[in-house]
Length: 279
Ligand SMILES: [Zn+2]
Image (tube, rainbow, N blue to C red; front, top):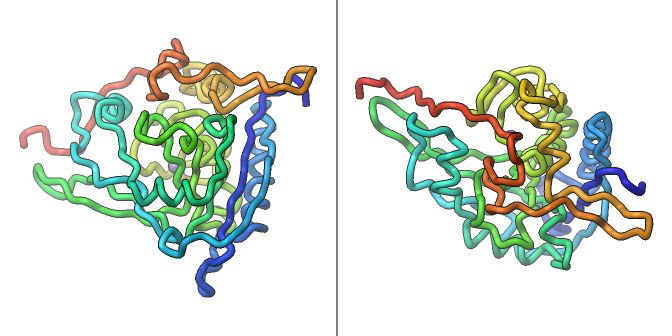
């Protein structure tokens, strides 16, 4: 529809999943996207399905490691967004090769959301174990958005819109995962809502960007500018009357959380750690 803020989504589902894998299918991807359209409608955002493609992929790419093991853990001196700007998550070569084998690149690729289905996408992270020690953990993801606030400039531009989907097999995953992961990408925020600062996994009701059943996209400073950031996203365009896509302006600093395109639509908050301050 002319003038309406829109995002384009392309879906790719491998046709050669192992026979015992049944957590993602073309029909589940379409149903998850249909629910996402409903979730974003009150925000005034039109979610436009560009294409659905299937085909055989190299079996070694059915299961991938998303990012390299982080080298520097977050501490309390700066917040998690500032830490990610200094030390962005690094896409693995394996993940990049997998994306390259599936996505057909065109001029609009840097502004397109790609939902790619995988059997397994594992995500390594650092967690405080005891005292002043961290341990490396790996989590099996149901969906992973490779957000710019985290990966900044470590994903080649044509692939920066990739979101991986690996589990839509429960009602809550089917109804929320795709919308939530699109939220990480287009709002460019982590797990946060109103008074809740970002954290790795926050289970609470209310916002689309928390783990829970909520789907709220709040606005204003008290809403951490989620709606405003969504509508400012470089993934958003408006159709002009002649049918051309007028994209929002692109990130000025590769899309870290405080990228200048957001102007004052950012939240400043202190760093935090659960480590004993008397370590
Ligand atoms: Zn999330």
